[in-house]
Image (cartoon, rainbow, N blue to C red; front, side):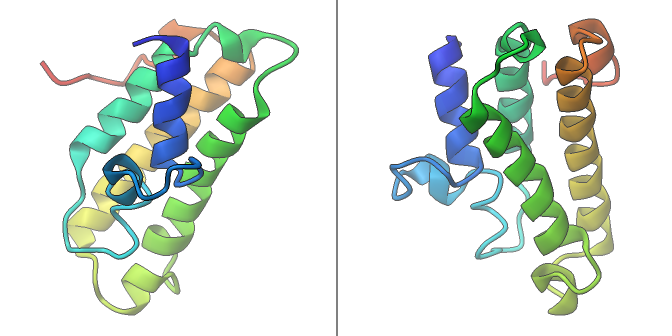
Length: 135
């Protein structure tokens, strides 16, 4: 994956891409939560982590791409607000199961931790230490 492809993918998953009618935006990480069809797509999580790995060096510079950071922040913030917060739309309306809440929380924590590590200069080894990509 190129850096341009990684950024493009993050924008789709954050539902902040100009082409929001694209299926990747519609069913990407945030798209799968709104409207929620009862399914969490694990592939979305792995795509975000792959994009983060591709952009790791760029996130360790003094000047970074605002759109990339906004996409990562949005993915984590809105997933927490919609799917994890007790008064968020998925929990308040009993649309998400306890197991799905745990899964979503694990993914969001993993994305957030990797992003934080890369932004503070800890590097990919620390950022992805607990991440296990699919085989």
